[in-house]
Length: 202
Image 1 (tube, helix red, strand yellow):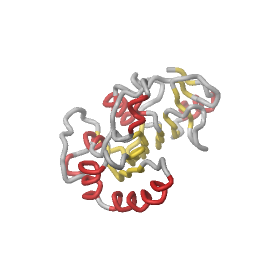
Image 2: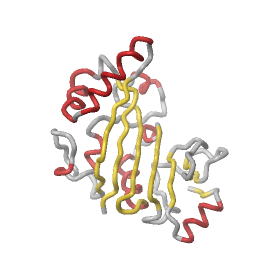
Image 3: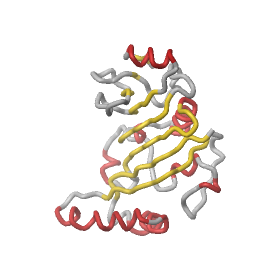
């Protein structure tokens, strides 16, 4: 791990809260420091998300955003534990990844981890889980609150661009519809991606 940005080094040294874009590819949002495995232009931190983020102090981050990055990580439990360590209580996490029904997911040889409706519930207290199916949460002691989950359906044809927005709104409107979709419909109408909004609990 290496920090390339002097402003970030100073912010962390002075105890200023920072925001990160994980897997930024050099194109992080305004107000966010980019973190990527490659030292390309625009990246502030070079890091492998399978390894500890040991240069980022505990409770120094207030928000993390990530778009199509976590599927490349094999050690998701370790990454979630590191995120929990570096983010302040109440800090917000937004993670967008390919859904397991996305047929293009399987073509990329660098994809390592599948994601579905229940994935982030494994990091939350059972009583707090949004879904009716409760999953175990004993794989790690760190805890997040799942604020929201949304599917984005694939729109690869003219007809799907017309039809799927309405279907997507229905599916995302209630937990029971999301559960029904993933059990019964996702292989016929694949989801391109799934987005999780999380809050760090400490």
